[in-house]
Length: 132
Image (tube, rainbow, N blue to C red; front, side, top):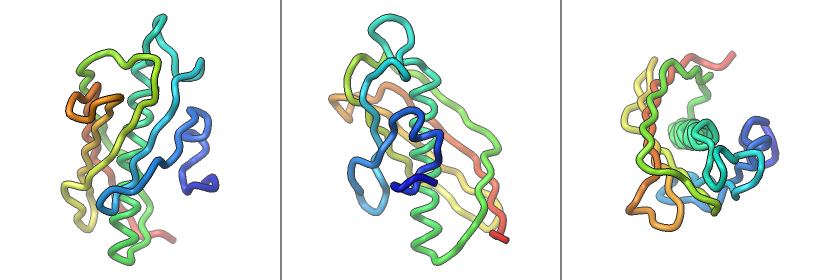
C-alpha cells in the first residue's frame, strides 16, 4: 500500500483520494499519457482500474467501520461504458451494496465534469476471508 492506503497499481495510474463522501473515498486521476486510449480519450482499462480501486477502497472503509480485518479477493467484475472519457480529471466512488461473511457486492460509478452523467459503471463481487 502507498501513503494514501491504495495499492501500487493505483499509483501507476496516478490515482489518489480526492475527498470522503458519506464514509466512502472518492478517487480520481488526471488525464495523462498513462491513462490515454485513442486520441483525446481515456483508455477503458484505466477507467476500469479506477473503478476497481474505488470498489476496494469503499469495501475497506466498510470493513474498518465494522472493526473487521479481511483479505479481499476480487471474483468478478462487470463494467459498462456509458460514454467516452475525455482529457480531464476523472472521478470514481464505490458503494457497498452487501457485505456478508464471505462475499461482498460493491458498485462504482465513474464521472468527469458532471456526476449526474456517468461515463462508466462497475459492479464487483469480492470474496472475503479472515486476515491471517
